[in-house]
Length: 82
Image (tube, rainbow, N blue to C red; front, side, top):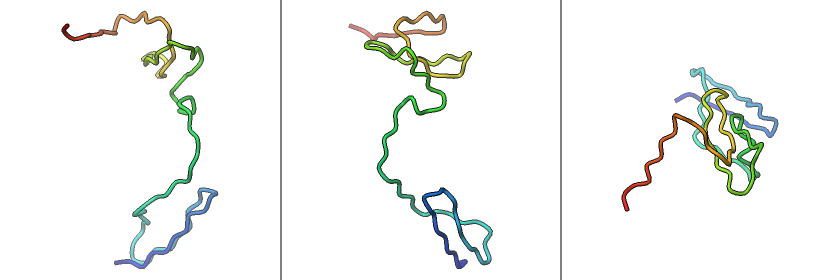
């Protein structure tokens, strides 16, 4: 097994040395506590977010968008049997 040393700093930079092997593979990763909102995701548009709104994917924009009315010919809802 190769002799590997590495250090991950809060700057996001990875420093390491590898002898006999050209890559460093993390065996475990720890992430501190932080708050993430669904609106922080790159393909989620939360404009129009209001009580009763639902999120639906728009194939034209490539984003998930908040809607209070759904007008989409590609949507099929199967409510099961009662």
